[in-house]
Image 1 (cartoon, rainbow, N blue to C red):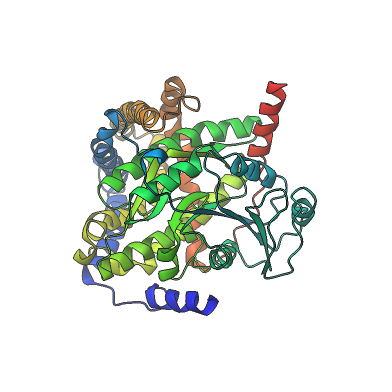
Image 2 (cartoon, rainbow, N blue to C red; image 1 turned 45 degrees about the vertical axis):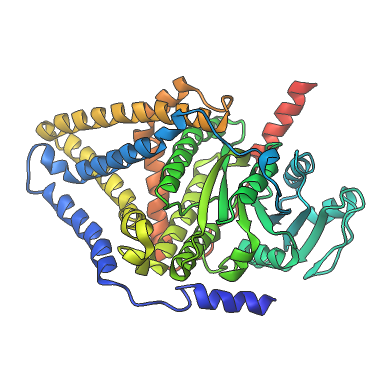
Length: 488
């Protein structure tokens, strides 16, 4: 079966069998770089606000995207019409894979949430990716699992019959997921990171979606970030909370345009047969979940299968998020380097009519996204240069543009929070007042950090690096401790 998975990957992955790059793709990707060079050069030859053309292009592009998302997501203003698990004739058996490498501190939180689901998973496989902390002692002591030996799947836990342990040599998350994918037997598979806490109805919502939509091959749940309760942690949780809300509203909009490419591996569902057909997760990609969606969609378009990818407002979870600048930059560096990897591997789809809206609309947008952080950082650097040089005939109109953009962002922040609340039913993790403050301060703080992480991702990608460091996860455990203390 392992060889079969590798053979399927070889058949379906453009990384392993690169197709010719269409002229349209070359033109699109070169254009966004040439445009940046031309606009940046204008700063040294022109006066007035047009000298800041790099920033104007950035503002216009971002505003157009916000308007697109606002328009496509407007249907969320209507009363929700979610399909309940009770209304689906036959719910598919659901298995859960928890890939874990040295996650003993948070693994019990994730497992406790899985055991108390309103629709319990038929199987839960801990894909232990060569952990060297207390994971083995936790699984044998607390959950009664017998050590199966490396590369083997344990017998079920006496206390929790759905729980099994797959012990593996350390090879990375994608390889651990693939090994568990081969070991699990259910029709639908959910991937849940070891630092992710599911809401009680999450599994039922995921099962319901797959049971009611035969063409559905991948689905994303909604995530709320949780950071440590330090000053730094509160700062990053504040901004990431509203960033996540906007991002999920954006995913909903692109889903309605039949162009959704992004699910989060921290909490996602997949139709197992479809994932097996395209070869599972690619261990060579820094963002294996993102790349997999491209491969599923590419295979579907080439074979005329009509596969669908969705984001579900009724499936929710909380997940550990970076709470320090160093960990945040590491995460965004990896995300962006993986995004660049995937964009490069799938360049034959950009501007290609064969892939419908995905090829003609979404992937050209992603081509611009590859350089959006460069536009943002150079625009900020130019503004500082004009200011220190005393060129106020440029600075003052530029500030007017920035104030106008902040006003647009304020409106979109409030709109997205309102849509998110109606869609998810979650009103406890967001505030209109805090969303307004985030919109005001984000352009001069969090947004620059996000772009800096992306710039590091460019460096990571160009140098061909694949290591991204160890993330220290403390937010979820700290939040659970606070909740436990409050309930006593």
